[in-house]
Length: 74
Image (cartoon, rainbow, N blue to C red; front, side, top):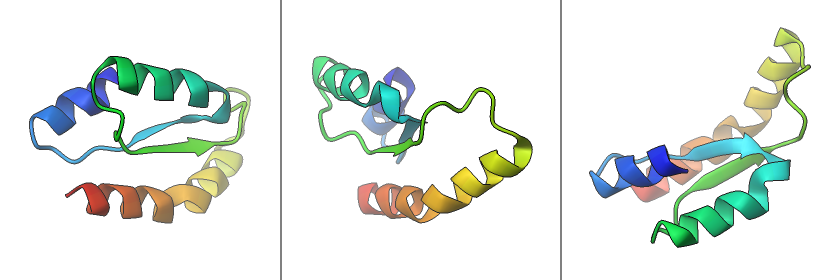
């Protein structure tokens, strides 16, 4: 979330992507960093043991959300 808020503060559209288990923490951190509207997209947890094919499938499932969030921020 630090990178996302830093980039956004410099006028560079950004989207925070993390697994769903970090949703509450990301939202709290965005508020603490003074940027509660930071765009974020969450994917199913866990991701660490996913195969390459599973990761591609997961990315394909959220790419439209990411594109929508980043273009809305632009």
